[in-house]
Figure 1 (spheres, one colour):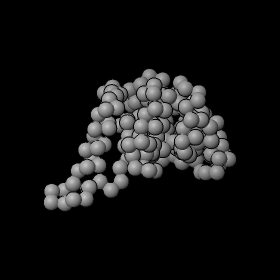
Figure 2: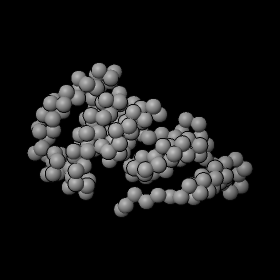
Figure 3: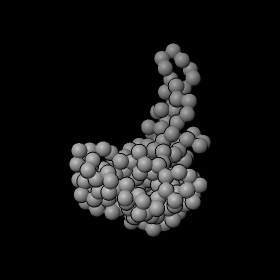
Length: 172
């Protein structure tokens, strides 16, 4: 489905409903810590992602708004400043999802060009000081491509480059 946006007023209303909800017969709110996200599948896809991040900070309890090591691969490939911005808000690692090589990954993501976006995103993350983590879904069409993915990791020197950032390259 498309990435639909929830109006800011609705987010504020829902947040207040969660904050104020109590179990029947109790007086203390049920929710102890609240993390509000303005996205459900790909963070920062919306053009006003910086304002939405500020809204998430405002509506969440202190320190609870987070990205869970997820960023928009689409935006990383199209917005040269996005990775640097993500680093300034505390992003240290980012998951990049693959299903195999180009044709297989584009097929399973249902987004022509996603594989190339993922490679460009990986480069931009490294340039910004963010460690990429590659998540590879094992599918029947992707299994024969695993050796080529291993070669790609080696040719991009991902282990060495991530180590230079103070971490270990994760592929899982």
